[in-house]
Image (spheres, rainbow, N blue to C red):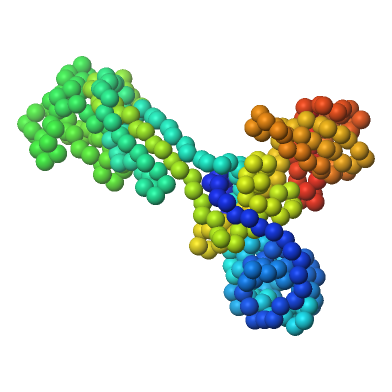
Amino acid sequence: MKKTLSFLIIAALVLCTMIPVAAAAGPAEGVVKDFSGNSITIAADGKIFTYSIDSSTKILLNSAPSSLSVAAYKGVTVQFKASGQKATELNFADIGDQHQGYMNMAVIYPREMITDTNTDLYYSPKTSTASKTEIGVEDETIYTVRDSKTIDLGSIDIIKDSLKVVLNSKELKVLYDEAAQFDKSADNDEVKISYDTENENELLLNFEKEINEKAEEIEKILKINYRKKIYKIAVTELYNFNLDENVHIELNGIETSLPKAMNRSNYAYYVLNLEGKIIYINSFYQDLECVIDSIQDNKISISVNTSGKTPFKDTLALSPSVSINGGALTIKDLKVKDAIKLTVDPYDAYRVTSIVK
């Protein structure tokens, strides 16, 4: 199933270049670098091959009949046969998930939380580390009415002998042993502790008889005090996605290196293969902070300062429907040296579709 999720990418060093070269003999296997309705460019054996495609070209997805629009992705593996400059058969491999996210050189996300939970920590040791430290105790009176004979105190570690239960102004005896039996000769003067192991090990108070037929009336006649342990949980998550050795990388629609894509862009779409490795990164500008160097016809030249040193420069085409300050301004309102934020839309031929001044 193809999905869209939000993730961050760890940097690696991969260099890709686009060299249009003519036909190679098939059958062979390579990686898709580019494609259109009438041509495809494939990297194979250290070379780049460009073939024409027509209605007689056999298109397969995992050896099953398919179409180019369904099966082809940049970066995906393809087995191909060719005759001269023409592709006669293209057998594409299936892809895995599709994601989108901000481009960052490294992502280490540490966080801490204070909690009273006694449940186990849920995290993946491959991507995270976590620790749980007891830091003290706290007085509490909160409870939840589960039914007319059961009170839920939550997934907590209670300090033994600290629990005080008062029902109709009468303090009840607390039985800490789940196996203990109620004294049937007594008049509902006992309450027993148990754990609901099927519901995050929640601590329950079980009464021999109904507390009250109306659950909403119970809080008026039942008072509970206890002390519980408090913990500090510290988690460090490392977001790390494997890059395929043949990953295809673009910046604003032009093939580039991974360092350039990471340093210049601030957003990307990317595609994984079935092994979970990234095979295609489509990076572009989203709300990129920059300064206008020049404006000429439908193009805008910008400078971007990302390191406090020499800024990088770029020239981008403007969409005919470019929105400036939500439509309140026009191109004539933009001036050289204006500080702006701009967004490039991959679905609008990598043109600038939004500017905020």
